[in-house]
Length: 602
Image (cartoon, rainbow, N blue to C red):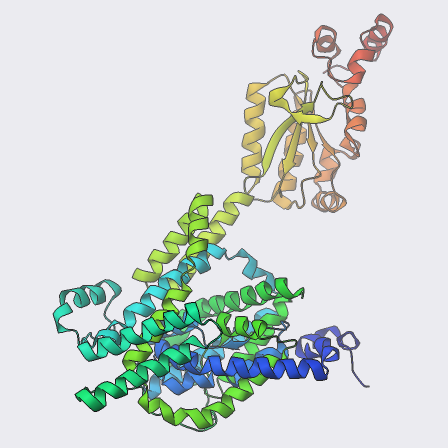
């Protein structure tokens, strides 16, 4: 069969052929635009790849390898038209945090552990994608990502202090100790090293500000290297360099899946997976909002997972969505995922010609570039926005930020995620429970907050907005109990229930118990405009039988007419509220006699 549409595939096979959804959009015009965008992306990836590998503790060429095959696979099997995958700052620094206690950065053992970690991350990502767990990313607060990224940016700068200043700072020195050593040994700073690093930094800032169309990283890197060459030639200053990169295609590799290697990386697998997926899906959705595209989170999980699985066999370490490369790809006019695929292919070709020149790139210039990267990662606008608008999100952001600086990075991510989930659960466990009453100033007696009007002394209307699950039943129980204490004569309670979207077994059981308790005291529990799905959930749990189908109403008018006949007529005779139309009709002597004849004992 000639498959030209993805809907012709069996449902189980569609995650393995998402490219069928966008292939019909490809034509001569899109290919031309994608080729230009891909070439631009490859040029941007050159300095970034080397920088990210340095952050990750990997040999510099591995940062380039991670932007080749993984970028092609992620674009082919993802759902975003513009997302470009590869090494990123956040993933690189977490990788370094996880692996540096187990092996010397840059060593063969370190690289082997990185490939193992990448393989396991890819395996989990693919499994999550096929299990349709893409929505889990929605539960990670943006404040977690913002706080972690800001903390990671400061750590990146901290790790480059020794290369920027020429000071001898032992590997693994903590954040506080690094800055303490640097500040206490200012007089020992190597002037030549510092001059190259500072010149690279200032040149990058100047180009980014006054010539934004130029590739500021490449210009800054060339400028810093030129200054280093001048100092070496004229002043005899010796500067450490990155060293020549291998001008070869990504060599084949294989992750070590022995028990010792797996144990070494196990602590960071979950954290790296969560971070990588959050980064990729967030970037994909951000770009999709601009282009009008729909992004499938589950498909992105599959695409990212396959890119890491393949990457681990082609010398690539953990890859995820790159904000810088994806933003450049979109701005350069990319039309389809072919642009991201071409970016990976063009990068592969460029490395063959450019790699030997890395021997002239000073570590000080690279440190200046990484200072630029670190500064650009801090989202000051978003931080200020969070600080001004939400105490809960502020707490999450600051806690994640502090944990990033002072704890292991994988622990910081887990802490942030747990705090985010705690805030979410706290909010959902407290549905809004508001007392309502007819507005006497409205001709149609629309309902309003009871605090501003008169209530019926026997019947209370309560609106519940939120899900009734095991975590929310206690809050609802306490809210209704508090209302009962304030108005003990209101034994009848009608719940305006169209705001209830879900009810679990615990919630249904509580409502059944509440209905039985109120009937025992001469009152009742009623539901107005309850959704069909919620009714089905109540029926499945057995709660609907206990509550009684006759106590469910389609409208407030229908509910008032039915409940009014069940009220205590002795109270009605002396009531001055008269807030229902039925109350006005009952005020005539004839109606009073009928009411007395039909009265039902409480």
